[in-house]
Length: 339
Image (cartoon, rainbow, N blue to C red; front, top):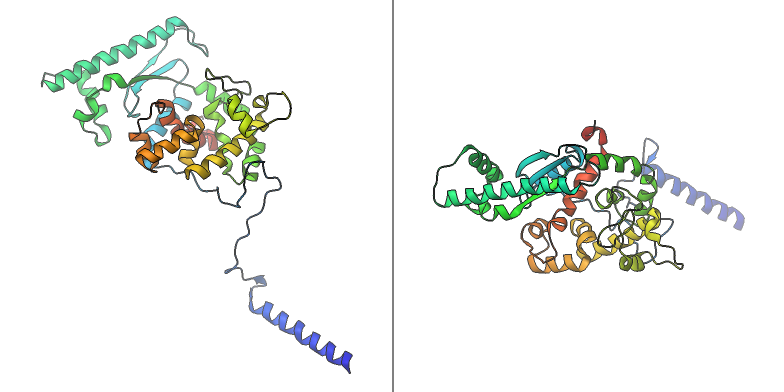
């Protein structure tokens, strides 16, 4: 009798369970409308990184105010060859006075004579702007070159009297890097899949794998004048912190060890600074430097770029994030920009 009762109860339980399942299905598929997504935990967590599933996967902000700078770097990477030099305003990146062509054979590095040619053209435009500023101040007659400069300066609704002041001191030259960027794209194919896995496993956006386009054009043995080494351009101090080694081998020359170090650094930077624009810029300017900028002018990244005047926050730091956005855009669709 007891066995019969137990079997009856078990039968009723199974029937109830099956009935509940049938009420939560549609066309034989479970109803997951109220289900909570499950974030997969990575197979390996890089040391010194506290993993929170999906916490750092926010998108890269791309405010419209940065578009002139992003467009400038797209041209630098894909339009202007290494024999071409853009003479431009270093604050208003859409103001390009001239794209000069260096005559003769032009290698990766310019000769002293070629550098002198670039300097002379920069000096020419500095004089033009100084004279124009005086003409505008005293209402003197303007020639055609003056009018063309004024049209460039007033673009995007800028006030002439504001933007013309000090324009002669903002003249800068930028050499094209089309050939170098194409070479970097070719090299990056060897590393892209593994780099993306490293960032994905660290809970970071995979597109951070494009950062070496800005740092080194994917040159594994690249060296900078500041002592940074390798594809990811680590200094000795940063390497000790973010990719410690138990031997004397310089891991900065190992692209994969450096990518893991970069993932640790960027994870830390994002948690300290709160957004990817600031975190990526800190790769050039430092976490402390970007924190100081935020404390002085606020968290809005465009405001930082336009108004922060820290002693080390120069052209490279102001443009670092725009360079990354441009490189990322090109690398995601090379045929569009490099047919």
